[in-house]
Length: 114
Image (tube, rainbow, N blue to C red; front, side, top):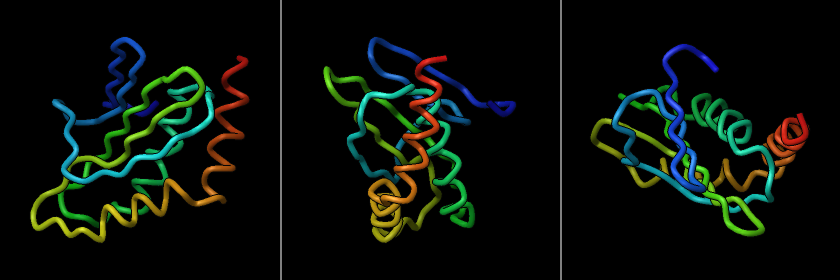
């Protein structure tokens, strides 16, 4: 974890963010199989930053909530106006990308057993 990242755990929910308080000006959600939640959050955060680093004022926020047989991920974060709807579409496409999901899950599965 890089310097300055905050991890908040409350019940079955984990949040990874840089600036407090965390907020979702833009976001999208997806379901994932149960793996190591913090590792999954970091993997998604890295690719989300790569995707949106040129967006003015963008700061990633990842929330991972545990359900009985899945993880619910909300990915997005802070951004300064104007905020276009196309950004949420890009986040949703990232979360549904087979190539990214395969890599994230492979890495997070390994960490789940460590």
